[in-house]
Image 1 (cartoon, rainbow, N blue to C red):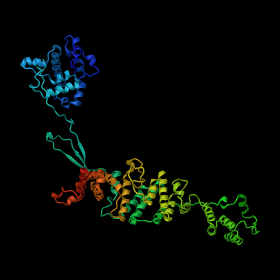
Image 2: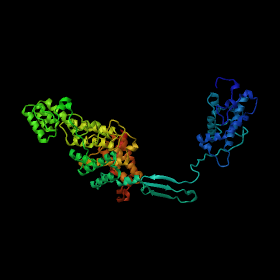
Image 3: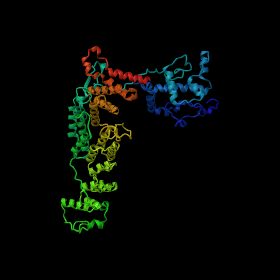
Image 4: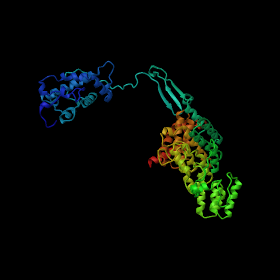
Length: 608
């Protein structure tokens, strides 16, 4: 380095194979060598030619490739020997190469760039030296390099080979790529340099994948559903086929999935509109059997009697009021007659208890309604205590009482029973407070979703008009109809789920032709890409047109990524448009108007 004149620490250049780990063992100060040939230390450098080759192959591809039969190490060794010879004359003799050339040529020249690096203290590692040597050898000019030459250094004259670009493949091979029009392109391994004609094969992906389940599922769907030649009967037929083939009615989940498909059939039949009674009828039809809800006897404490008083009023005991012994088995007429006699004597409280004990709830409720409100509430509570906990009448009475029904909080359990009769009761008998009805249905959907019944929960959300959200947003209750957005995306966005969602959007358009589901357009693009992958480019392009129409009706700048992706896919598929076959040849390069407008909007957004 500059400022240090001690000759004992001046080291000669290392060979290309040297690294910092072995420099302390291979190099020695010049003063200790006493004139020993510096090239004696080349044994290690030459033993690492394999590593040198890897280094030059990775970082200097031009040097890594030499003509056949030429020893690559000879070129490197000649550079190395020339450099070391010149360096030895400079460092050991105390005279620079510039002074020698000045004596020979009559003028002094400045040190070379390599020596300037050496004197300035910069690193002179093998990589830097080799890089400089390679550059100087490739661009040799005697005006700039008048210091030394291989002939002056006594080394052999080696011609530098011209850089040769290596072949990527040593043997001809088959090239394969996918075409934008649903084709598989094969280029056979021929040698055009040997006058072999190139052979290209075009295969249809639709033909190759014709026996796969995925392609059959895509071909069976009558999409896109927004086209003019589609009849809603085709959509209803598809839904019925899905019920027959993909719904296992022996399981609860299969029955829930079947219920969603039947709801779509109902919406198609009624042009997207329905009322609560229509849905209730659908719910009760889908029930496997109507459960028998066991009624209970009213509890004694609810009626207001102690156990002794309750036993004293059982049949067969003396009636202290009338002085008669009632029969053990009483007919309906006798029970009503007893109720009437108690009212003869003005015993309203006893008459209410008699009516409640003998299931005369109509008499008891009417009589208590003409008394004070507290007595009416007492009789009503006694009546509801006789119903089973999971009885739909309990749900209705609790809803009419202004409370969230217990069924909305407990449904979905095997012990609780089927959830559909409870929802049917709430849909068919809406009370005055519509907010209470809405909260009760949403609560039932949340309960079912928490227990894994996704299809049932989404049915409840549809009845409550819950909007669709986005994948990954935990606050949204649903993103695709019948699929949980809290699972992996590959399982969430299945082909069947996207098809079912498109049918629901189609049903909405039957009622409002200009309506659409904006969050669903992303999944339409995903479905279009699947169609293109399976060799159905015409249908894929039609989906791109539908998405572009929706985005152009809105503001494409509000969804820039979606607009750009639709434009990219449409540009690949635009030649698959059947309208091009009817155009003259000079017009077949034209693009559809919606693609031109979409590209203009994307460019405007990028500029903005």
